[in-house]
Image 1 (cartoon, rainbow, N blue to C red):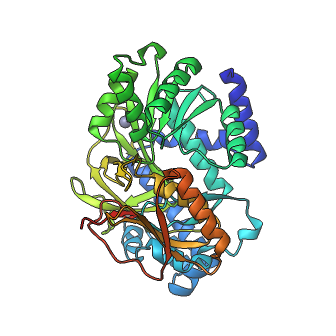
Image 2 (cartoon, helix red, strand yellow):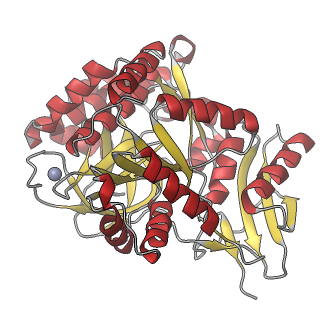
Amino acid sequence: MNPFIAEKIYLFLTYLRGEKISPTLNLLIQNEKVDSSEMEQIKVNKAKRLLIYACQNVPFYRNNYDFNPDEIKSLTIKEFNEYWKSIPLLSKSDVLNNIHYFLSDKLKDMKTHYDKTSGSTGTPLFLKVNTSCWTVRHARDLQVKEWFGIRNGEKYALFWGQHWSNKSKREIALKDFLLNRIRISAFNQEEKYLEESFKRIKKFKPTFIMGYPSAITDLCSFIKAKNCDLSFLKLKAVITTAEPLRNYQRKIISEICNCGVFSQYGGAEQGFVACECEKGGFHIFSDTTWLEDENGEMKPNTLTEAIATDLELYSMPLIRYRTGDEVIFKEGKCSCGRTYPLLERVEGRSGEDIILPNGKKINANLPSYIFKEIASMGVIRRYRFVDKKDGMLYLYIIPTQKFNQEVLNLVEKETQNAFGKDIQLKIEITNVLENMPNAKHKDYVVINE
Ligand SMILES: [Zn+2]
């Protein structure tokens, strides 16, 4: 599709959803060049507003903390930073166990959009996101694409999940068409599929590629083995997301695609947190997300858990949320001139492969992808696949009260669709999952006996 038409369709669709993309984008671009102290001021003002809103309208904060709005308003930046550090950190289980207490009283008057977290920690979470927050996330996406010379509406190849049901397939196909993109399954690593994907890309001629770095790497390795590359496409960029970008992945992707490879970091709970720029600086969007370590600082050169607050998330405020992702902060400024603070890198969740009991190799994100859809039904609290090396694959589920036989059948069907029909699956319902801190993947554990 002509990019100009695609851009108009995109803007029309976002308009229908009530998203004011253009003014939001302008504001984000304006914030790119403010000096560091002004950036800090923007962050603190937004955090004050969110905190006051939460203590007045959100049961969890109203019931648990003794906030005084007037006092919060009057604090200087320095004082507020100290105050902020005194707010206890929030874990995913805090939210899951009290989910209704996190919803704003004003939710019914708010336009919201559903979002689902990736459940790679074994705990899927279903979020309601207010439209203005959703708009910022979309506008941010357009903003960073402009860094790489990509205009809204340009053709791209998306390496992402595929849906298995025919209804979802049709809906996704329509969405992909309207958004001027082709979708390549991030989870199908069969040679035949890679060959087909290579042909589709050559025919479609995208100007950029986006998606899981592990899947893009798979295809690039396949293309390299054929002594080919994608340089004829003159790609503007490859943007990776959902998993940390490893050095070896960046190397092979940039070699085969003959362009820069840029990593993004974000999530359903924390929003669009950070992105690498054309000069390689990993910028934290502190005008919309407060990112810190456990001590409320951004201590450089230290691997630390990222604590994040999406400052635009009003429908369900998650203040000082433990992301479970590990990051390293960085001091200094980027040569691009943008003043956002910096990350050295995101360690995050692992995208390494999983070997199923039958020897089939799958992407590490595939288990969570199955449950990402099921999470939206609010029927499962936690899950874990366990390979006990006896040829079977065990799936342990901690159900919610809404769980029933129908859900059980659906889980079985979705798992077989994802992992293959020949997998020997045994599903067990349980009340507790043993803590396995050293497991490589928290939702897929191999017990070496
Ligand atoms: Zn930069």
